[in-house]
Length: 114
Length: 108
Image (cartoon, rainbow over all chains, first blue to last red; front, side):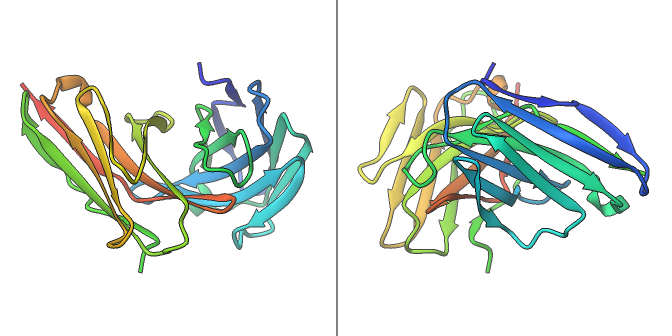
C-alpha cells in the first residue's frame, strides 16, 4: 500500500464518451502528477500540480483535462479520446514540488479506447 | 536525444549472477536521481535514491557520475524475484523524468 489510490483500475470507453480518472493520496504530500505509460515507451509526464496549482502541462492535448481541487485529490477528465490514447495512466505524489524527493505511485488506471 | 536514456535489454542472467545497468541523462541541471522497479502491469516502486558518493542497499549498489552524466545500478547475487523492469529517473525541478527502463530476467 503506497498511500496513493486510483480509481477505476480498468476503464473501457468509446471515442465519444466522457469519463474521469480519480486519484487520492493519504500521505500529506504537496505535489501530484499524472503520467501516461504506453507499451514499450517511457513514462510520459502529463501534468504537475503543486498545492493545487498546475505547474506543468507537457503539451498534452486538450481532450485531457486535469483538475486538482485540493492537494489530496487529482482528477483527469477525458473526452473524445482516440484509440492511441489507450495506455496505463499513473498518478503520483511527492512531499514537495521541487525538493529532491521521490514520487510514490498509485496502481494506475488501464484505459482502453474503442 | 532522449532526456534519460537506458538500454532496454532484455538482460537474461542466471540466478546468482551480478548484473549492471547504466543510464545517461542529458540535462546537467538535473538535481537528484532514483532507480525504480516496475513489475509487469504494476506501478513503478522506488528501489533506491542515487547519491554522488554512491550508496548501497543490501545486494543493490547505485552510483552517480555528474561529470559524465551517468548513473548505474549493480545487482549482486541475482534472485528470481529480481526479474522486473528497472527505471532510471532524473529530477529536473518539479519534474521527474523517466528512462525507458531496462528489462531483467533472472533464470534458474
